[in-house]
Image 1 (cartoon, each protein chain N blue to C red):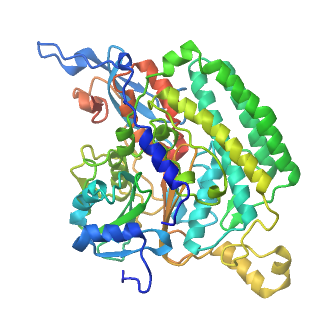
Image 2 (cartoon, each protein chain N blue to C red):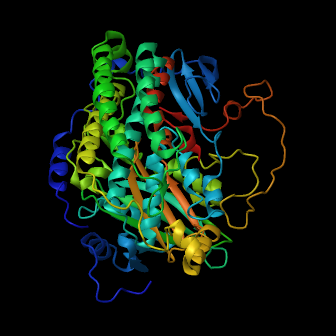
Length: 430
Length: 186
């Protein structure tokens, strides 16, 4: 691995932040022992199904929960209700046609999915994208991260009864989505990434308005929410000490993103393996201390501030230039050439009908999605369609270990835990 | 899998090769992804070494998946991605299992994340993991026939209809059946 200027600091912080993992014992209810006279587990325990269609199970997922009174003693999480066969579909489409499918993975931050996929295919090809494209990708990714965190925190607070926070945040999210739509043409499923570049260029006015939106609109609303929630007694009672997961558990279960960072592990793809141009920006990787819901909430709030910092630096430094790689293997030729000469026409035809053909090989590339490490593993057999296109979905991995956060807590705690893990159904089930 | 000539390996891959020794069947670092190929029967031993060896410390099992190569033998290629929070390096581990007995040892005793990822590989490709505590379908339903990510499964294949299940009805005398499977208990 190339020497990484950020590595030293990251290692140091990682060592420092080891803390006792369970400082809130009153939140934990050990299971009651079974009665003497050989009682069946179903006599005292009740089994309830939560979901798959339940207002608090955003997306669709089912939890079968075994209760002893109000205490959760066992849980089985059953995903799959939103399974659309992403990998099977990807194998039947050309590399460019897969991009709209990646939108639908995490529909709260589709652009990060787009760019992660495009960067993986670019890695297979060995194409470099122009500088301006990298900057646009960073700006768009960070705006998407902000919208994802706004959705997560807004929805989680609403489920706890704080309608105001929800309206504040969804308003901001919609401003950002409409703003992104001015460039991408779509509000939600943007399909803006291209292998070797992005679809459309941004204008200086758009960049200016981005700054206005994050500085004048978003920052005051974040401050409002800090004022509303941070020291709110009800909020703290519901969040502090609930859903605790230790560092060792989190690493063993493969948690990444805010869920892992809330336990004190300073792990962020943008920092330890800077893909794209993230090594050019200054930003902090916020971490929590106890790994509970409150820390996850706070890590997300702080991450939005760091994303704003990155957006400001990227807008200050964005260079002029092309937005797509001129490599004819991946990029469509300019329209005037397609109409003007036979080589460009053939190139266009081949790229559209057969798809770009990367050399045989395999590549794994991970980007920092809003919920954690979003990895793509693409295998090419030299044809225009991926032989294998595997997504490492952070939500799926998180749901595989959510029982660690739920066991011993109460039924009502399922809702905030689930909200702060921020499972996105499209990504979990693919 | 020939040894690359006139090409220096990354330090982490060199360390991996030195530690694993003759367990390694082949290796490469094309496109910057360190890759090691091993035998299927060595997977638990190798994975434990990767995790516990102080100079490697691959404490994250990031990803598990399987690739189907129907024309080749052995047919199924299992691909694991490891990551180390200590050294920030990655490793891809690959091995193959034959079509007539698509099974290998489970990593679920070593990593919690292997639990669901192996269930998904079982569900999608039909690899059976020996020693997995709870190997059942995860994204698809129990009545699903076949394994859709095998190359010989047609994309448009239809599935048979089945009777609706009524959860918790009186016909389910067995509590485990009533709740659909094993629960994760305290």
